[in-house]
Length: 383
Image 1 (cartoon, rainbow, N blue to C red):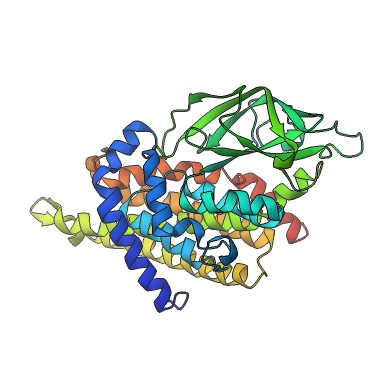
Image 2: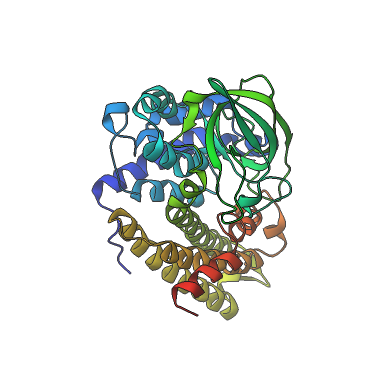
C-alpha cells in the first residue's frame, strides 16, 4: 500500500540517517550493548548531524521544524538496522518538549544551544523506588532556602541517567493537600555535577541494553532558584501535557520494530534450508509472514494517521493511548512469530531478531502500561 506520510525532504533525511548508522553505529553496536551505553562523544556526533535541534526554534540554533515526521524516520531507521541511539529518545522526545514549553527565555538561551550540540545531555527523573506509576505519592523533596532549593530523595529507572549532564527532577516543594494529592510538585533542572548528587547502580535490563538506566540519589543538593522549570507547584500538570507525543513515539518505534522483524525473518527464511528446501518454501512460513505483514500494515496506518493528527495539534491522549496499546501488542506478536521462524538462531543475540525480542517487552510497560491505557480508552468511550 502506497505510503503518503513522507515527502522528498523526509526521504533525503532518511538516507542521511541510514548512512550515519552504517558508518557510526552498526560496526560498534555490540560494544555499546556490553558497556550499557554509547560512548559520550557519540552524542556530540548526533549534535553535529543536527538531529537534536530539528524541533528547536531557529533563534536558539535549531532548524525550527515542528513536524514529528523526522523523529519517526529516525525510529524507523534504527529499527531497520537493529540498533538504537542510546539516550537520544529521552533527550529529544521527552525532555525537549518540557524545555520548549515551560523554560523561561533566559533558560532557553542558556540550555538549548548545548542541548542541540550534545554538550548537555538530559534525562527526566519521575519514578521512585516505592511509588512506581503513582507520581502523586513521590517522596523526594525540594525545600526553598533563600536563593536555592535543597533537594533530597531518590529516583529509579532513569533512562539516560548515567551520562546525563542535566536531569529534570520532579520533587515535592510543598505538602499535598487532602483535596489534591497532586499538589505541590515542581520540576527542577538539576546539574549532575552538583555536590550531593550521585548516580547509583546502572540497572541491568533484559533489553534496551545500549541505553543506560540508573538509580539516582540526592543528599542536600543545592539547586539554584533560577533552575526551577516553570512555576512552583505546577509540576503535575506539566507532566501530563506531553503524554500524547510520548506515547505516539513509543507506538512509532514499536511499529518500526515489528516491520523490521518481518524483514529480518523474510531474508532469513529465504536463505535457510531445512530438509533440502528453503524455509520460505513451506506453507506455514508463508502464512505466518502474511499474518505479520498484515498486522504491520494496520499498525503503520494507525501511526501515520496519529502523526498527521499530532502535527495538526489534534492528537488527543486517548488517541495516543489507542496507538500505543495497539502497536505494542502488534510488536510483541509479530516479533515473537518472526523469532520462531529463525529457529534456534532466533535465540542468539548475534541475530538482530533476538535483540528486537528482548527490547520489545518493555514497550507495554513504560510510557503508561497497557492496563493504564485501557482505562484511558474505556473512559474516552464512556464505559
